[in-house]
Image 1 (tube, rainbow, N blue to C red):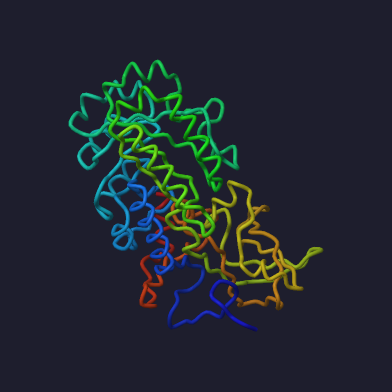
Image 2: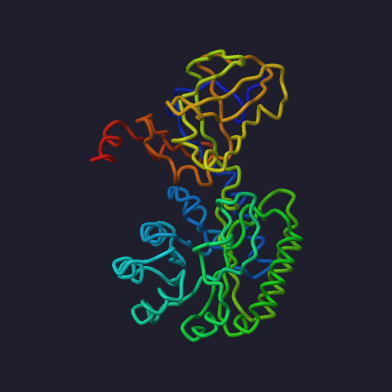
Length: 382
């Protein structure tokens, strides 16, 4: 059988940690960073890493060479960006407490408020910083209702234009975060045109505009030159600095969750139980009810398996796959796309062994940057 790192391989005890573990490929991150740099150069935009998606800071020393800073959704994320990434620190939260503001104002370059009420409450306290307001443009792109930031009853951002105009003198910029996995350049262009028309009076008076994240511009087939031209056009029209907040686009296909088959049971179909859990270690797929990607599935072999996790959750299923050769106990199965929204949301459900975090450096060396054990589990609960 041909072995390759992205499908099934035998574990090298002298190189890799004990399964399960997350394996980040630094060379793949570098390729993505070069795509982001190209966009920055072509369009003039600035790119800040969305820490809500990826916060594994031992690779920040590579990423900060190609990006302009970080954006956060909490005080802890803002602090992590300040301490480990450097450059610009954008602080946002759905709601700040007084203690939050006291903390983030010391380390942030920009503070973006979710509501006019919070803007008014804390404006005087954060004078001297760049101040922004999140705006709900009432248009969006998302494949999932749970991730649609502009859906009905959304709490994310202000939508009443007259109320926004009434506080325009209190802000330097705005954030429109209205995309989720948007890979449609025509949709992006049309939506940005709608925003340009609807909010033109406001936009002409601002210094900067963040268009948020959720745009799949680092994908292989994305028309990045068309994207760059549209961003540049928008920036020049309103004389604003445009920001993007790439999360998944910053680490697309740059990591795997490496698991090992513990048992194979049969209930109408063969079910391979691996030593990881979708509910504990790949929560994003559980939340969006999507099938985890295993490259072997694309090989369309003759041997079909359900890949299942080892928790007590009945729905702990990674998906249905076909392999070219039969699986057996001890085989290693790699779950792809384990960078975005994966390591940031792992948890101790069922007290399962937490995956280590390993980085395959550009020179090929394997650097294990985190291991967790029983005492970490115990401390998390008391």
